Length: 373
Image 1 (spheres, one colour):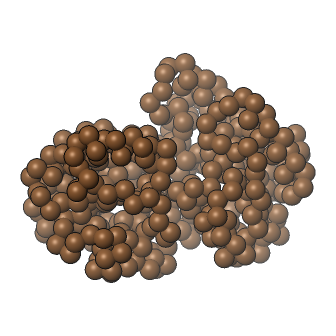
Image 2: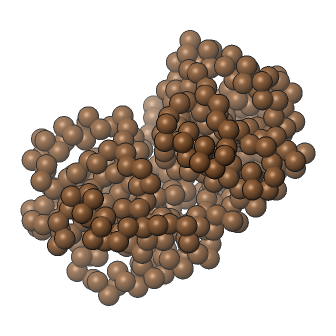
Image 3: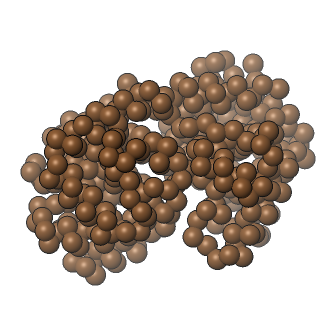
């Protein structure tokens, strides 16, 4: 039996948190002693508690870089590791990947694993920030035993930027259990969301961050609302971009066509309310929300970024598009509206893709194999 500590910067219920929850559940079922540490957030903490997984709150854990706050975070991590004394430290998110790995070495943790949920230097940033992040990522890798990339794209990127030697890098795709989802029926999901029965609904589930490019979704609604009066865009999630998105909706008079629901518990339950699932991200790792939409048999449109092309074969099980192209997104939505036979073929192929290639069981088994001391 191993004592495993999972650490993640934020506890908002996004893909990285889902990943940590799945691994923690899998490790506990195999008889390991598991603790998850993160910033406080009741939904995430409660989800862990429901499975009997211990939760430890990290003070000063924030996504943004801030020197004095991060120094405090470092000492919080030292205290955490001295208290928990884990055999395996599994880190998630760029900041924790660096600070946590350094702290882990200082505290003599036997195995340090880091999962890169998409590299931060692939984001749209000034050149100097990218160079700084590459340098920090290389430095952090010195203290990490294994670096898990959630896509082949991220592994190739890490090699191209010389983040770490190939012996430290492994690609393990995220996975889901198709059988576990208790999707609401189309009618019930729409009733709970306040959507009319006959509306055509384009939806997404995402934290409201710049990387998700939800402004692209809002801008595509301008053309869509003129062409199809009963079209609705539903964005489930919360985050720092909410105020800007609300301003855009007001500016373009889209309040009758674009809905921001905020964060919803078990958001994937509502997927069958959608006629199309759209993920127009500028940067991704390998998104859970996309896999869940495919499992719900909702036709999917997504940007060809990060690991998404490893899930979607354009025209077979979904549609791919360039990021930040509202016109192209609307064209893809219109295609699915008018090609119902093709959309159904894609739905069937998408479900088979998830069942065959992206199972949670495989992800957990492959990951836990790297915990061996």
